[in-house]
Amino acid sequence: MKVLLVEDDPSIAIVITAALEAEGFRVSPCDSIAERDRLLAGESFAALVTDVVLPDGDGIETLGRVREQFPAMPVIILSAQNTLDTAVRASDTGAFEYFPKPFDIDELARTVRQAVGASSVAGDDVGDVPIGQGLPLVGRSAPMQAVYRMITRVLRNDLTVLILGESGTGKELVAEAIHQLGGRRDGPFVAVNTAAIPAELIESELFGHEKGAFTGAVARHVGKFEQAAGGTLFLDEIGDMPMQAQTRLLRALQSGSIRRVGGREEIRFDARIIAATNKFLEPLIAAGQFREDLYYRLNVVPINLPPLRERPDDVEALARHFLQLAASEGLPRRQLTPDAAELLRRQPWRGNVRELRNFIYRMALLAREDIVDAAALQPMLEQAHKAQGETIEGGTSLEVAVARWLVEARPPAGAVYDSALAAFERPLFAEVLRETAGNQLRAAQHLGINRNTLRKRLSELAIDPEEFARRG
Image (tube, rainbow, N blue to C red; front, side, top):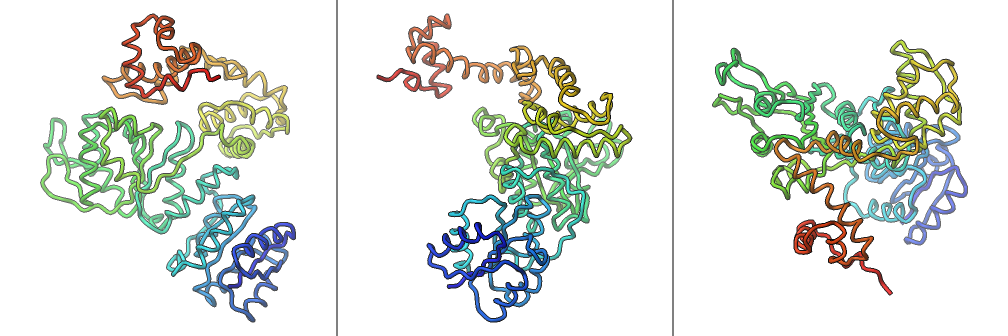
């Protein structure tokens, strides 16, 4: 079987050719669109592997006619332009797979093998999606590439998506991107923060209510499910939803219909569901605070959004993006010097992208010069960290850690103490066991608690003291 490789970088072409030949393929390499079309006109190929930026044009823009002429030939796209725009454009062509550079050569070879063996090409029935400027996500790091690839996989279907990520990572932006780029973009995007709605009102907000359903219900209210008809319903902070509302939500997702509070009519809804949470739901399930069946109903396609500390290479691009936004909103137009951008890159950004955005806006307002260097930036960073109870190196006091935990973990009312105790005990016991080399008697004495109490808590927390015993 023959594979056509279109790559203008000779070193990359050599590596790919060798990997595919090791898989048993015969490879015809070329370095331009013109040469690609000439080879396609004269030979048959089992697959096409193509770069995007080529000497005589855009490898994606010119794929339309190739797809028309060879609809059964899988296409795999490679690109160093690692943006969401590129990933979506690649998906729009019906490409079997998209690989941002640098990529794993073994994974590419396996993917070509899978593509050739597939009975149909993913996306043959994909319609055109208008791609323009203003896409909501910024970043070209490897962790964000994984996010972009997951987004492109859900654009052509209505599968339920669960976005997982810390506070401030941009979960709602991912949901908006899925909506704006998907088939429901002409419908409404309705966002609901389930943590911000009082427990007694959340069912009415989601499902609506009939007149007279409860005290104060003076008229019929159409809920978020109906408001999102034809579009997308985004349920943020789903981990904070009360148990009773979870049961109603599960029923709605299972049946595809809702019933207003105080009503009898079953109303079919037509909305894509995207949920998000900054919590680990598995511990909540184990504690009986989140329904396991609802978790599996929501977690059809999980998208893990990385914290900013795991993608520091994106900090400069985000900072410059926020400076442009700040200027467009009337703040002074500022620029960062390279040393200032590097200083930003080294910060912990525990509040993630939201914290970076707020800082950049504050910097745009308070900076004395239009061009901000590291010397000017340092005092502003120190002030920001001081306001958070931190040093510039990121050291955190116990009081600040507890305050941050309360904000980020959002333990449910009535369970704050137990949740905090469980969160505190695990690292405490682990550290003491590490100091005592796994000796439970010494650890209990060090903690000032009964050995049987320690043993019981270690068992409940699934902590194995043997892991901390010294060897040899």
